[in-house]
Length: 195
Image (cartoon, rainbow, N blue to C red; front, side):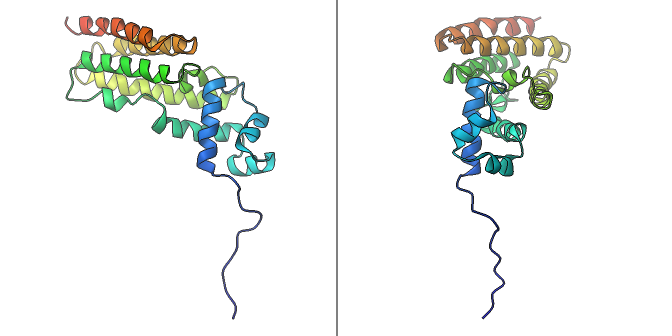
């Protein structure tokens, strides 16, 4: 009896691609995009270079997958802070505290997206800038829904503060100090939105 079952060609993959993306995320987050080589990646993933390229195409291809994963597993949850039922100043304060907690969770890492915006690879730099701009747009639109005149400069302030929190976390600043900075920085939006 003949069968029409087709078997995949080549050897089956010996690794879980999703687990590989998680491993790569940890490497990129800890060291930055430029400091992680393909050799580092294949060693960490336990695969050989041909398997790496077959699975991800390139280092930047893997990083694109990492960015997608980061958005759902490591990025600051904007929606949790920027709820429509919350006063804007309170929401921005919650966002700054969430950023401090997120960055402090892995002090060596800071923000994967912010770190990627100044890497040497133009494709990755553009991809991370696009993610960063999209996040800024979420913040700006949230503020503009109730305070259109204040949206631009408050967004700049919040995003600049978040960048500083990321940098300080990378330098080893404690969660308590990051939270203190976030709380102090939260005074500005509260005052700006009273006028």
